[in-house]
Length: 244
Length: 339
Image (cartoon, rainbow over all chains, first blue to last red; front, side):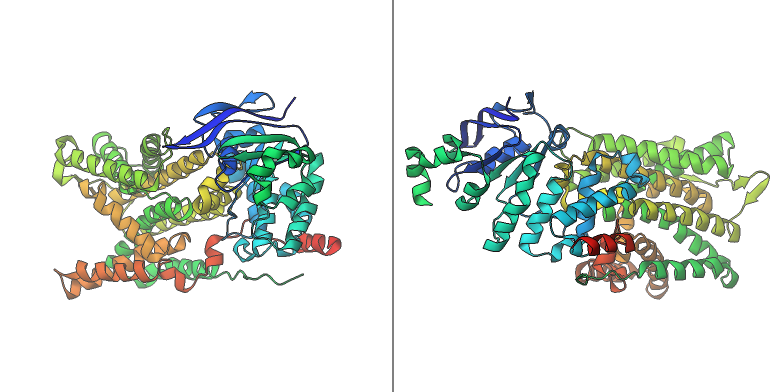
C-alpha cells in the first residue's frame, strides 16, 4: 500500500490552473523526486499535500486516510512534515531552541507551561544537532548560520516529530557543491525512518538520492516511475530534461 | 568548539533587582502623595504587563485590556457597594475571574473563530468591544452612567481596613511582584518558546503540529485575568471606577506604556508606566493645557526611532528574544566527545 496517494488533485488560482488532475504515489521508505520546469506546479502540489493550500478538487491520502481537509497541525499529527522552499528558521532564537521547539510539539500546553519535557528532550536535541553537524553552533542564534546550515537546521526541525513522510521543497537551493553532497549524505540514512518527497532543480542530486521520480509540466503529470525509467522517457526528455 | 557568534548578556536581572530594591524602600522617603502615585503605577504596571504578554510575547495586538480592567473594576465596585463585600481575599480573586471570563468571551469572537485571526482583525475587534462597553456604561444609570461608581468602601483583611498609603502600596507591590515572577517563569518556559515561535513565524510552527490559535487564546485569557485583577485593585485604591476605565483611551494608553518602555521584556512595560505617568505629572505642572502635545511628541519619537523602547538602550536583541534551553557543561561534553 502506498504511504502517500494524491488522486486527481487540481488547484486553480483564478484563471490559472496550477495543477491539473495530478496523481502521485509514494511508497513507505521511498525517496521520491518531483521535478519539472519553473511554474510546472511542483511546489503547488507539495503545498496541497502539506496543507498550505487546499486543492480545488481531488484528494490526498496518507496511509489510506483522507487528509485533504485537515489543517497543517493535524497533518503533522498524522505523520507529515514539510521543509519550506525559503528557509524559515526562527532567526532570533538559538539553534538549540529551534530544534527544541520542533521536538516539544507533541507535549500538551499544560506540560509546556511547566517545562516538564525540557530535561528529557535535551539528549534528543543534541543528537539531532550532532547528526546535522550543528552541535558546535547550538548556542548561536539561527540567523547567524550560513544558508546551507540553515537548510540543514530546517531539515532537522522537519524531522523532529519523526514523520512518516517528509516533504522537502528545494533542500539544496543556494548551496555550494560541497554542501549539496553533504546534504545527500545527511538524508541517505533517513531511508530507514521515513519516506521523502523532494522537489528539486538539481537533477544530479535527484538522480543520486531518489528511487523514483515524477515529472510535472504545466500542472500535469508527464511521467512517473523508477528514476532510471523516467529519465529515458521521450516525453520527459522533450518536456524537461533536454532543456535542463 | 567555535565561540557563539552572538553572546548572551543579561541586563534584565540587574534592572529587576535595582528596581525592586528601590520599590521596597521608597515608602521610607516618600510623602503620602507620592506613595499614592507609586501605588497607582504598580496597579497600572499590572495591566501594562498583561499587554506586554499578549503583544510582546504572543504578537497579539489587543486594544481590549481596558475592557477587562474596567469590567472587573465595575463588578467588584458593585459587589462592594450593593452587597457590602470588601474582603481583599474575595475582591481580588473575583476581579481576576471577571477579567478571565470577559477575555475568554472576547477570545471566542476574535481568536478562536473559524477564520485565522489577523493582527488587524484582533486589534479592531478588541477596540470595538472596548468602545461599545464604554458607551453602554456611560448610558446605564445602574452603574452610575457618566459619573461611574464613586465613594467605594475600603478593602478589608478580616477586621483591618486597608487604607491608601504604605499598606496598599506594599499589597500592590506584592501582587505585582507575584504576577511578574509568574510571567517571567511562563515566558521562559517551553510554553514561552512556543509563543516566541508564534511571534516570529506563526505559519511555520503550525507545520510542527502546534494549534497556534489555542496558544494565543490561552495567553489572551491569562492577560485578561491579570487586567481584571488590576481593575479590582484600581477601583478600591482610587475610590472610584468610571467609563473612562473601560474604553479605548485607557486601552491606547496601555499600548503606549509598553511600547515606550519596551515590549517583550516585562520590566520595560512597568518602566513605561512609571516614566509616562511621571512625565505627564511634571509636564502638566509646567504647561497645564498643552502638556499632552509634548508627551505625544515624545512618545512618537521613541516609538519611531527606538522601536525596542527605552529598555532597548540596555537590553540587546538576543536577551529580548530569550533563551529556552541553555547548553551547560553536560552538553559541551556531549559535543566534545563526538565531534
